[in-house]
Amino acid sequence: MGSAKQEKKDNFSGNIIGEVIRSSSTDFETQCYELYKFPPLGSLVTSDDENPVIGIVSHSVTESMDPSRTPRPRGPGLDNVKSIYDDSPQLNNLLTSRFTSITVGYTKDSSIVMKLSPFPPRILSPTRICNDSELNEFSSNFDFVSRLLNPSIGSSDDVLAAFLDIASGLKPDPEQYLIEIGKEIASLLPGQMRRVNLILRNACK
Amino acid sequence: MSLDLNSTSQQIQNMSKNISARETDRLKRIETAVAAANDFDLKSYEIVRQNLAELGRTTTSIKDSPSKTFFTPDLPKNIIVAAVDGSHIDVDRHLAAQCFLINIGSCLIKYGDDPYAELATRPTLYATDENMVIKSADNRTQKIQGSVLGIKRHIEELKELAKLINDIPKETPSCLFLDGTLFPVGMSIFPQFVRDQFYDDIKETMTFLLTESSHRKMSVAAYISYPSHSDIVESLRMLICDDIAGTGICGGCVEGVKDRDIFYKLLGPDQRSPVFVRKTTPGHNNIACDIGFFYVKAGNEIVRIEMPYWSVEDNDIIELTHGTSLDQSKRGPGYPTVLIEAHEQAIVTTADRESFVELVELSLNANGLSTPTSQKNISKRLRNI
View 1 (cartoon, rainbow over the protein chains, first blue to last red):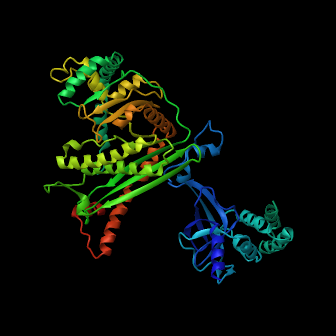
View 2 (view 1 turned 90 degrees about the vertical axis):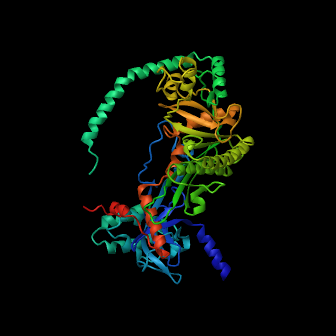
View 3 (view 1 turned 135 degrees about the vertical axis):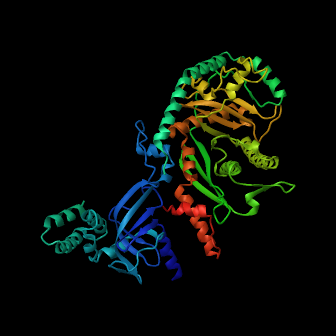
């Protein structure tokens, strides 16, 4: 039992991509260990501490670590962006990639609860990308949809579409999955069929 | 009440007029110095120099005419550059705790295959009698603060630079940079036992660097932007100034001219001057303060590069230093990238200083100690009217 738990932990640790640097009841921000190594928009992630909080990536940013030092263009004359980073390897130390995750649930007693967590993640909790089985389990329940459609979230429809694109890819019948969740979205957005269609169309790309 | 800018502005204008009135004369003196460099007679200079050296004067050894120029060498594809810089928080007598802090920033960049960079900062608090005071054998003491702390910090920077060698593979050519002069200036005003202590520290580090440089291709360079030295101008004076051999007072032929003024005229873009050597004790090598130096035209300014004296016999190391200094300056742009990043790591901002004071007071309070401070300090914080 102990070794199985350890094995599970080892598998998870491979997916750890950064640590929480800001957290609130509704979202949390993660700083990546490596520049540009953030998960794609719509990815399901979790804070990896004693009260794991589950989030969907809604926004990513790469910028200077020091706000008073902005990047300056290196060209013209350099072939491609890779050569710029090879030529100035310190950029990897001076820039930072971060992403914000909308809180969509938490884990309690090994079960997913689709509500806001009673407590936000602790600062410096590791953040990891959820594995396929966790994503499958999470996306089988549609309760998260209403949270993502919250108008306070910037580009919420695109974030939802990006999540559905990733989640549907794991389903045996992606099309059927999108039809079923489309009904849920339609029920939450009465009279907004064009918007619903746009979300589903973006999820199919 | 803030600075009265109206009153100050008038004084600044008067200053500018005075400088402008003297400019024509200054340009003439630069032309005189440049002409002297072009006509430099190595043999005559060496005779004069040896005479002065025998009198105990520190002189500059010149083996090539100052007007000789050297083109930029090619750099190896794989190279490592490293640099350190430092800042400090001085002892504040208004604080409840007597202490000072030295913060050393470092940067190491590998170019070529598998490029990478390492940035680090290392703060060290000095708060005990043992490390806040220099003691002589006969129990005389010197507190480390003010200008003494400045020298102490310089030596700590040198030590940190030496430590960076551990992170550099032996087979990769490297250039280690310091900001400013290679050896600290201004030590002559300190008591002998303080100077001895500092010289011993420097000697230990330089001996380590000398040993390391014997089995790897490595240069140590102190990068001085917009230098105000006049070693070469002083050497020119020895040949052209009639008064020098007598009273030692120049009649004004090249007075006020800096080395950078003449090398700005003599050097083409990216070119360097010959390497000159400044020895403090004629006929002897002093590892703790003898240097080689050259000037290089990097972009719009003349830069002075100082190297340990042992480097000047190795042309490969001179070329490595010349090429790396220029390359780094171009990457900056204008000032070496590696020094910029080391500086950014070292810098202690005003906010940092305030946080430091708060941390000290909080820590003392947590240990049951009160934190009395001077009324002057309290009035500065409150700024009541």
